[in-house]
Each structure stands twice: as structure tokens, then as C-alpha cells.
Image 1 (tube, rainbow, N blue to C red):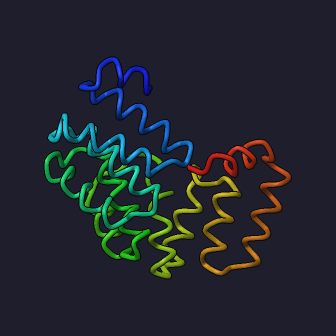
Image 2: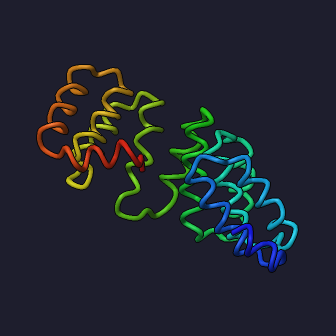
Length: 180
């Protein structure tokens, strides 16, 4: 990536791809430095802004990510990825009520509720978490254990972890290695 940038420093797509790779390696500060150049070259690009917001989110800079994500959603209300990441950033920033309102105001893809559950957990909406956990697509016991633990339900947490260890150890190991 560095060689590609040196050969053509005006190609923002190389910078966004490089930044995406850096974020996956945990180098969010360096990714944001690379993306600053991409933003200078292409300040209106929603793809560049998305990468900036994602890097900020992964780096724990939720309020900064929220600002950029609101800009993206304002420019393109149908940019589902940005709206979903905005809801997640709101949840992590301690504003789950805003996240829930955003989620519930938009059509969602099939697995959207796995991102909504943490907001419900933070709001103490146990019945809503249980309803979502009981959907067939959310049946993986490890995901259930995370949500039960967040709710403080030790009994169901350990029950779900026991099922994860017995029923799906390889998938559970993959989730632990690469959280979704």
C-alpha cells in the first residue's frame, strides 16, 4: 500500500483500502492519518467518510464517529451501513435510547437485531433482548451468552456458554477470534 501511495499519491481508493487493512490490525491512529490524506483529495466521498467513521468507531472515538456518520446519513438516507454503524456508535457512546430510536425508524436487514441487542441491554429492556435472542437466526449460544452476561443473568450466561462449548466449539472459537 505504501508503495502504491508513493507511485500515485492522488488515488484515495488506495488510501481507504490501506486504512481498512490497518484498522483490522488494530492500528486505528495510523489508519486515520492515512485517511486524512484521502479526505483532502476527495472530501465529498461517502466511502472515504465511512472509512474515517469506522476507524474512529473501532478506535473508541464514538462521538467523532457519530458526527461523520450523521453527515453520511444526511447526504444519503439509504446508506444502511452508515445508519447501522451510527446506531452502534450511539450505543457505545452511552446513548442507547437514540440508537434504539434510529434502529426502529429504519428498515433493517435480516440480522440487524444483533446490533440492537446491546442498546436494549444498556436500557435494561430484558423482554426485548429475550424476544430477539429467541429468533432462530440468533440461536448461537455464544451470542446469547454475551447478551445474558450484559443483563447480569449468570445462570443463563453459563448455560449458553456450556452449550457453545459442546455444540459449536469451532464456530465459537471463530467468534472469539474475530468478534462480529
